[in-house]
Each structure stands twice: as structure tokens, then as C-alpha cells.
Image 1 (cartoon, rainbow, N blue to C red):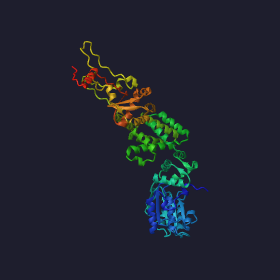
Image 2: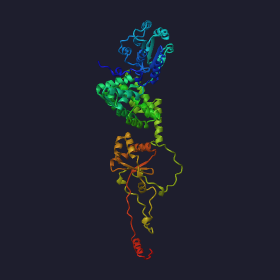
Image 3: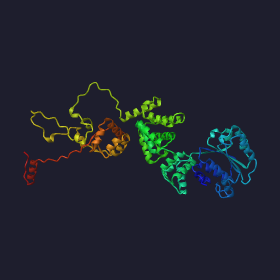
Image 4: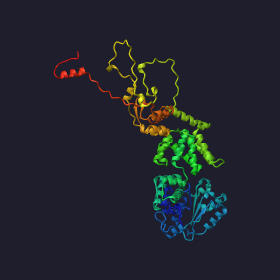
Length: 559
């Protein structure tokens, strides 16, 4: 008969136990030194190895050929304990045998010596489920048991045990197993089972298992039932999880205040039979990742996700303040707690996402705090200009100091519309003489001077990718374009009319400026780029003639 993976690959020795060195090292040293206690208490979350270590300890104290504190797993006693033929090792589930009569049977049986083993070992699982009377009956035997008896108590809720029980046991705390340790174990098991598992899939299983090796192996068992090559998509399908791109899209809809898109994705996921409560929980965990990125410096080492997913999460975190992230998590947590209590889970999630996409609907203190934080961020980034009081007397404007502005004169017209440079004022008819062409200087700040001083903007490709998060349409319009910087101007080089048609809209132009501000920290004015025309040098015929004569040795002057 097929044996499930978590039973088939249950560790047989202390050295095989994953992620609990603080327990296994101490137990091995006690076995080697012969300092065996009469009562042990194993506590920790589910699937961390409490029952496994209990069985290994039962074999170690009864092994005929112990090896450095570990059982040999080959002698008669070790094999008998593994296959259940030795009845001196008793496993009892306190969840179903919790009364005083059940404990009285254990106490009476404990008075007899073991039949085949050296010690009679009682493993009482979920011991916190015993009644008060059962605890009181067990207390005296637990304090002074017969010399041939060992009690091992295991529980996930140690706080429910009476202090009198705790004081009579040697306590060992089992930690949640690290994701890296679970991932390595899954790869080993997959190799032994002639299967393949990707690194991303192993880490995803570890994240879903939440530190429990048994849960990880159970999920891997389901994945192997679907395919011998386990990928992240198979894991998400087996666990009933939404794909990560849907989580990013849903969070983007909340960030961009787009309730229609959020409801559209909810409908798709609901039609795909995704559990709405689980999806809400996944969204909470997603924004928890954004909270970690906003709050800590080494978030990469603390979050279980691929490099691409982390980069995308970091980009989303840049658009939110910490107050906004906390507010989103609070709304989702409220919706999650209300699911299953009357309204449909889908409706609860839809209400939460609409509320997040339209924060003006929520008048709570948390919502107002998040909105104020968003306004402060907009003011700091320059997206919102605060009005300053006008001076009582305006200084006289000097025409020669005015600066031509590509954005203000002809905002983002196609390049052809910007080819003409403003002409100088025509002189009066009674002027004695017009100035020579050499004497005409460029007016400071003229369009010609702005174009000549322009240098390539190297961050432009990165900035275009960032703009796509704001608007795919304008990001596509800017795709393949080039940009140049001249002073406080950013000039866009494009042959397409669509690019400038998009940027003529004030809302689109403001989004581009906001993206530039986040990348460079500066606020630029936008305009089209025009390559400066190369002027051919004109030669004076008289100067050419004089130069040729001087080459013949004749001194000649221009006079």
C-alpha cells in the first residue's frame, strides 16, 4: 500500500531531524552520558518534529546498540518499535482520551515492568486537552514514576498546561523550521522519489507550510499526484492559490484607485474557483511584504519570493506610504474576519477593494490618516504645488532676461513645429545701419541655446519602464524614444505624433514629471528635442586674397 511522504520520510535518527538542533543536540548528549529524565515536555507549532523526536527518543533509550546517542535502527528493539510489535512504547492521543478514567488506566499499567524493552515509554500527544481531573490524577505519577517508565508529553499550546505539570518535566521548545531548510529537504525527497522540483516551487511550498515540515511534505505529495516535475504553477494549483501576477494586479488596482479593474480580477478568480477567503489572506500577506520593504533595510532576506517578484513588490512599495500600507492591511483584515458570518466571501472582498480604490468612501480615522500621508507625499514630490503669497510690488520685467520655454511657448508639439527660432525685433526704417551678422549674439536662454547644450539622459530607459506602472498607454508611446537634458529642461526625441499627443494632456504630462522626480529627485520641464543645425563657416574673399599675397612675400594690409 502507498505510504504518504511525511510518514515514509519521517526521520529515524536525531541527525535526520531538520531545523531543530537545539533539541536534537541536547537529547543526543543526554543519551551518551546516560542522564535520562523521567518526564519530557515537547512544545511547538504543528509539524515541527515533536512526535518524530518522541519516537526517536523512545528508540534511543531502548536501543541495544546505540551509536553516538542515536538509535541504530537495526537491532530487534528498534525494528520492533518502528513496526509497532513492541507494546512497551505506548502512543496516546489526549484529544480523544482526555478523561480521568483514561489516565487511571495509564497509571495502573505503568506499575508493571516492560516485557521486551528496557523502558516503558508513554507518548501523550496534545496533552493540553486533558481535563483538570486527569491532570491531577497524572500529577503524582509524573513526579515520581517507576524507574522503568518515561513520559513524553507533546503539545502545541503549552500555556494551557498547569504549572504543576510544567515544573515536573524537562521542557524542549521546537521552533518553526526555516524556509531554506524545508526547501533543501523537499529537494532531497524529490530526488529520492525520482521527481524534479524547481527552486521557486520548493520555496513556495515552504512559504505555504509556514515552518511545518509535515505540511510541506503533504503539499508536495499532492503536487506529485499532478506531475513528476513540480513547478510554482503546479504548487499554486494544488494549494488553490492565486498566481502572483493576479496579486500584483489587484494591489495595483488599489494603488491606482481603479475599482473597475479590481472587480474584474475578482470575477476572473471567482470563476476559476479560487477561494475568496484564501485570496484575501494572500492579499494581506502581499501587503505585509510591502510593509516589510518599507520598514526594514534587509527585507530581501526576510521575504520568500523570487527576484522578479521582489523587484515588482519594491516598485509597488515606492508608490505607497507606510500609513497607506497599514490602512490597506487593516481594511483587508476586517473583511477577512467578517467572512463566513452572513454575507458571501466574494462580496466582502469586493467591498474591501472598492473601499481601498475609493478612499473618500471611508471616513474612519485610519482612512483620513492615510489620505493625509498621501497628500504630504505628493507635496514633497512636487506633484501638488502649494500657492505662495504674491508680492505687493512686481519687479519690472526685462525683455533681455526672459527665458524661452519649450513647454510654455508650444507645449510638446511635434518636432517640426519647434524648428523656428524666434526672430529678433526688426529695426526701424530710419536706423543708420543694421548690425553685422557676426555681431548678433544668441539671447541667453533661447531655444537654440537650449538645444545646443542638451546632453543624453541615460536614465531614460529605466524611467520609461517606471512610467508603464502609471499608464501603459503613455509608456507604450514613449517606448523607443530618446531624451536629452539641458539645464532644467528634459527634451524628448521622437518622430511619432502619438508621443506628443499623449504628453499634451496635462494629466499625462504630470504623471511623467512625477516619474522623473522619483528617479532623479529633480523637477524638469518637458519639451521636444530638435537637433541643432550645423552652420557652414563662411570665408571672406578679401581675407583669402590677402593671405595668398602674403605667401608670395609681399606685405599687404586690409587698409
